[in-house]
Image (tube, rainbow, N blue to C red):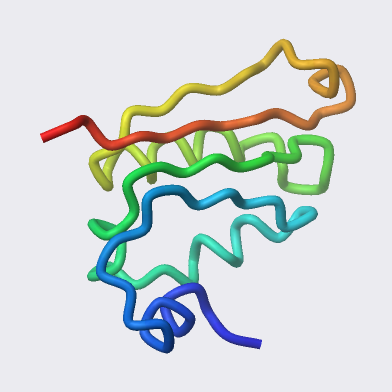
Length: 97
């Protein structure tokens, strides 16, 4: 298995327009695999967040704080058809230069 940053290096990417992340409760591990120098390459991120798993109750707040610290504006859909079972969509976007 490779980290996200290893894939970025292997593909020699200098810009990623959209990351769509649905890692079935492993989003925290995938995000942890993004090296500091690779964050500026990501323009937008869309991810499914599971708050119904052990430790998941803080994920929305944790991911929101992390993504804002990386320069993204963040929104979370807390009223989707899956929200009642603890599955939410999170969207992060960098402001246009």
